[in-house]
Image (cartoon, rainbow, N blue to C red; front, side, top):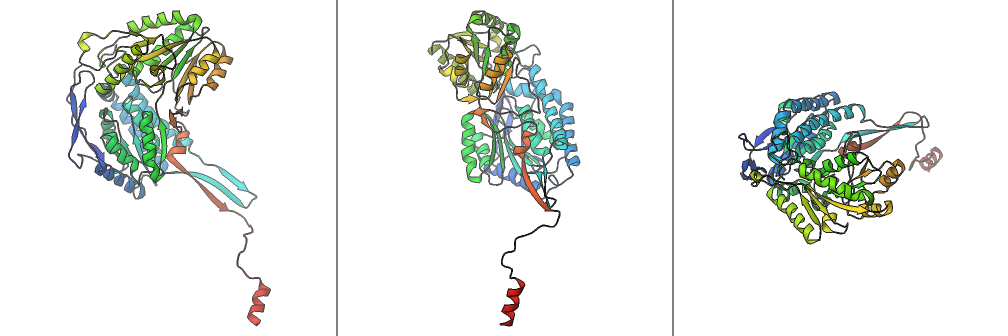
Length: 505
């Protein structure tokens, strides 16, 4: 992997790239070789305070929320244009920072531009109110108003796309933003700040503070002038965020962990199901919240399916994330590598058979975990219950629809699910019975931006995407208007006869 020189990443506050108040920084590490990429300014409470003050001033006094909608949306479209113009650099920085194969990060850059264009259209055409006439006397109508300062906390597994997924609706609806990106993936967040700066948004409308969750992130959550917190990450952190935001009654949207089941029946399209489950766990290096990390295969085809899985795993190309042919790259950080490899050790201790692909010796300095199957498993094992978040799939046989439904739901998570069958009645029946926010039937994980995204149980709270984002990023206000003659009850007003009698006496 050839690495270009990367400048130090600074905070972006009130339209300026600045060092932190404390003057501290931390190293950003390359997952390919665990060598430093660059330095990153480290933010603390004081930096969050400055960013929130800038965002609040821009919301209260600036033109952003009060400017004509078409004018605001022109900025949103310009950001999309600039993302497209910088797509090659964005995909390079994303691969450098995260270890994701560049063939996959190119799609994420394109999706980032699409997110901004989509919300420009949604706000223009779908952010509408309702009106209710009452007896020719009143009209009650609703409007959507921006809420205020939105605190956005984003993860490291698909950082650029997930940042745009939150920033686009927040800005398009008229809020101002303070972003706290994941400390392990600061590069594309910084590039996005440069793009937004070039787009010419008013000062303070968009701000970034880099740093750690325990300091910068916690300060953002606790800040009394932040009205919204949108968080994507692991469940334990989401729970802490909700506790820390409770004192100021923050509105929260949480997209959290997953242990999503894929269910393959014997009557399914064998090759398509095989393609889908292999892609669903091993793309994105397995670091995908909706990954089908638990695979249930009906007993009649179990042995055949497992043999096909073994062949696929052996043939997956593990390599340099900058190589266009690489299918699996290194995990983002050594700490995460240790976590994933510890789960593979645990699987052996729990009695699983571990089948792994091959990692070339030349990549021994990176955070590589070979694509791995865990066989001879049952659903009560920790490796079947806990989120591993790497290229590791638990494979479990099943005998009946009732049994597999019970196992699919016997987990604390409920983000996604996948069902493969040629019996569409069974597909709908089972799909609707699985406890998950989303289910795909005879399909891999494909996303339509108009639909809601989110999970059930400990996989999240709330929905974002499409017009559902308006429920989170805007306040619905009701306006009551009198349009005709109507009676108003009179309290404390004396009748004329009573007033005259009182005056005579």
